[in-house]
Image (cartoon, rainbow, N blue to C red; front, side, top):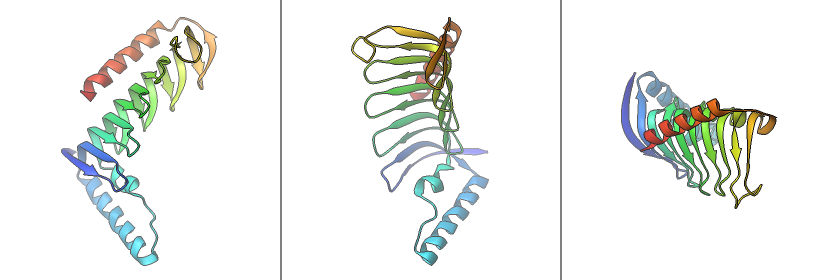
Length: 180
């Protein structure tokens, strides 16, 4: 597989700068674009959107900026966030860590704009596994922390989670290094 660097601006305001996969994916994408064009002109309707058509090209290290200001910098696989990366939201909240098929998955650190912070394990985009949830003095909860096993964003059992926190901090550091 050959990777090429480049940029693309989408019609909806999104921008991608980074690596693109060449080879069979390009042919498949060209066929998809042709199919889209034929559908658009034959039936006057669109069966694909720009994100579906061009997402399969993003592969490797890159940066995707959404029209709302959300920005992802990190690894892509077949168009999705996959591997390590940093996702920054317009309000200042951010996730640094591991992604699988476009979702928070594995070890990472999520920090909300008001200072609440979770360091630990994620599954399918949710806090799920061991970790520490810390509230800032200025945010909800008024300070303090909860450590233990979380399932679907809820603390289910208090216990030591230092191993998971260390993995999360290491994953976040790796993601930040990629984003530089």
